[in-house]
Image (cartoon, rainbow, N blue to C red; front, top):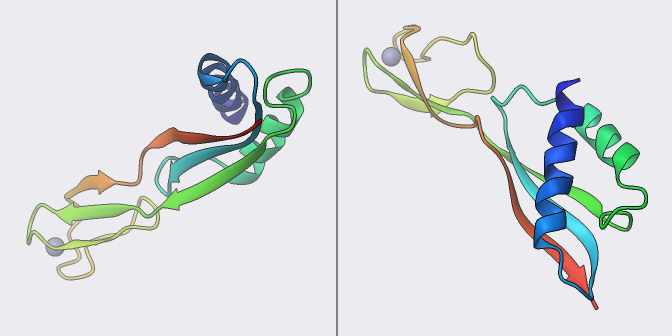
Length: 112
Ligand SMILES: [Zn+2]
């Protein structure tokens, strides 16, 4: 399961970054629309693995990064919500993905 390994890597990042005497109450991540990550599965996997770890009191806060593509034929830059859509201006399919594929941990919320 793809989302389980993502949740485990989020945990690994948080364990490295965890302060010695603070409680992590939130993990803030960015997920691109084109990353093919199932958000509900990721939330479920996160909840399943956080017990008895540095993340046991942490919520997963997900910030969605919109997909953006540039058409190689007419240079149009547009919002691409999912793969398989053509350029809205010329209907071309030669697209360069500019953003929306990423998944990264941006910050941890910590309370003393
Ligand atoms: Zn185009």
